Structure formats: C-alpha cells, structure tokens
Image 1 (cartoon, rainbow, N blue to C red):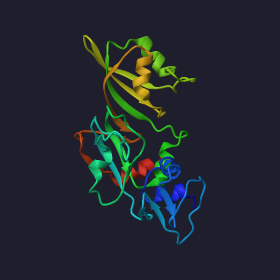
Image 2 (image 1 turned 90 degrees about the horizontal axis):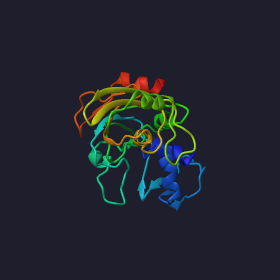
Image 3 (image 1 turned 90 degrees about the vertical axis):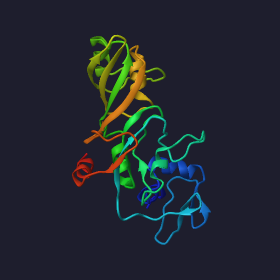
Image 4 (image 1 turned 180 degrees about the vertical axis):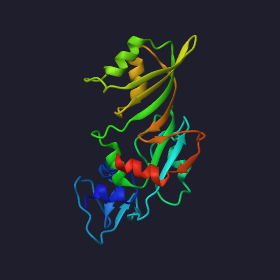
Length: 236
C-alpha cells in the first residue's frame, strides 16, 4: 500500500496532508526516515509519524464540529494559535479535518479518521457543495448576484470560479446577509469572490457541507454523525 494511503487509514491526516508530512521528513518506516513520494508499506512494517508509531484503525469515526472563529484548521500552528484539534485532544481516536475553514470563519467542519472517504470528498472532480452564510458590507445588487452565479475572476487567479448559488437573505442600511453555495475549495474563496464584486465580508459561517447541516449546534460543540449521514456522504 502506498505510504500516504496507509497514513490516511491510520487516521493521521488526508492523503494530501500526509504527502506534506512525508516531504517534511516526519515519517519513518522501520526507523528510516522517508521523504520520497510513492513509497510502499509492506506487511509487518512499522510506520511512525514524528516518532510516534501509527496503526490502521478498524473503527471509523465521523464528527460534525461547529468551529468558532479564532481556530486554525491544522494539527499545529507555527504562530501558536489555537487549532481545531486542541478541542479533540481527549477524543478516543485521532481525527483530522476534512478540508479547511479560515481562521476568522466559523461553522460546520467535518472531522474523521476515514482517510479514504476524506480523499473522495476533497477530490476536485466531486465538487461537494459547501454553503456559507455571509454578512457583507453594502447591498448586494442583482448584477453582482448574476456575476457570482456565473463565475467571477478573483484577484490573482487566471480562471474564473465555477458557478455559485447565491441568494440575498436580508438587506440592512449598510450591510447585507447572503447565502452562497460553492463546489470548489480555493483559498478563502467566498471572501475573495465577494471582494471581486466590491463587498467586504464582515462575518462568515459555513452552514452546510454536502448533505450535512450545521443546524442549531452551538459554537465549540460537536456531535457524531448519524449512520444515515455517513451513508449519504459515502454515496457522494
């Protein structure tokens, strides 16, 4: 089995993140550091990450977490900021985030030790829809809605975004609340999309990921997914 796939099955991280750990020299097989991609793990090999042995986990866990603003979606942060995994330090198994949610954003974050499902959900061909509730400066007019819905060219990008679902929820004197659904996962995408049509994001909350809904889960709380929710994710 390829090393990155093996690590994902051990609940270390997604395959992409495991590739980063390998490249950083944090992974060893039978005590020998491995930095090359594509290395395979044989039966009986002892694999360790940062000096700690890891083993495939038979039982898979799926957790829906309401991430507050002010947490980074990584295992550690070189600036010493709180991470989402700090919240799961006492969880019975090692889980990792499926994708990322900005430091200054809040909302639905899926965590799991199922590396194969994570790989499928994050693959660009899947375009699993993420829905965000954004409070922005000014009033989002119909022309801006049309541009966002068709695809907008963000600063620093060479191609426009994929079409988005956009609905204005509320318009106030100096701000608006909008609902935006996207299938892509570019860096800070919703904020950059809205900036491209002249609006700054004041607050941003992810309220849905594929079939999952944040619902009334409070900030900082988490719950296990139901069997039905897991089945729906797998069907994606």
